[in-house]
Image (cartoon, rainbow, N blue to C red):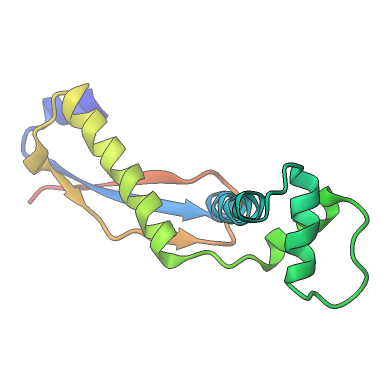
Length: 137
């Protein structure tokens, strides 16, 4: 990409960060882990599996309680909401890192790199990414 942009000085690039199902699942896991670690700190629970069980019970989920912490985590992760703010922060970091790489490693001037509108594709199973759109403006 850098070589192409260096050879075509009138072309500008729009960077479009994309979040996918994998990204959303990762954010859910991070949020859930933070909540469980908070229980560990606030309630003095050293054992992570025990803290998972406490958090699970605190959620008042109907039905039988899964036998293992791993099974409880699966249920909890499925119920976890993804914060739009966290998604935006992740997409901003992703776009910023790509922009910095193109500027510093490839020598592309900042004015040729434009921010695009971020996309969230929750049904797409592939990895998150930054898509490029070429413009001649």
